[in-house]
Amino acid sequence: MSEASHRAEEAPNWILVHPAYQQMKSLEVEDSAQVHAAFLVYMDLSEVRQWKEVSCVKSPELQVVLLEGKEKEGAPIQTVFPLPTHRPLSHQSIRHVLDRGFPMLLCAVASDSTLVYQRMTDGLVTPDPPTGPFQDMGRRQHRKRRKQQ
Image 1 (cartoon, rainbow, N blue to C red):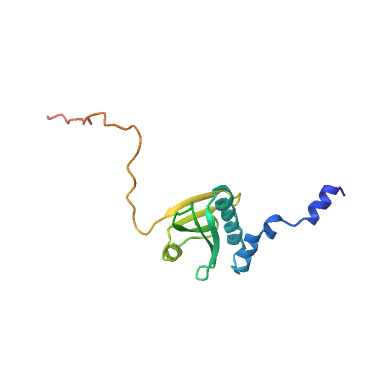
Image 2 (spheres, rainbow, N blue to C red):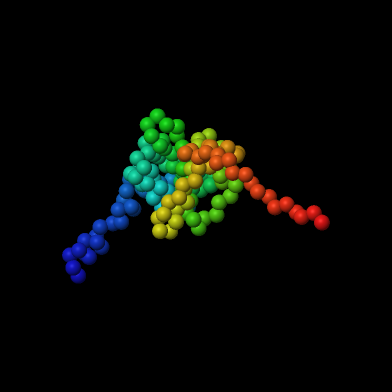
């Protein structure tokens, strides 16, 4: 056996020994896939997107790990709901997270670790008007007229 493969057998998976993962495991959420998804989102928020004060909390009703953090210093706290793509999502679970009182991001976590964030709101939100160098060109809409017989 080579020395490199021997070292690989001795070294534990770094995820399993990471303090944030250990903290998530201590919350005793039954779905290990959701805990793994929460850890991947935690790493993305704290290491890649540089969010501030990222922490994990358990939702006993949903049996999931939720993340809370601030996008930047002085910004409001947001709740992030990490959800593996194979796990179903209900209106009731979204309502439960929204009722916590913080803005919510749903993060779909694919099996290849792709993360897709979607902002969720309580009710309908009017979209922002388009930005850019748009102008009305004054084009008329031409309609075909029926021939009268």
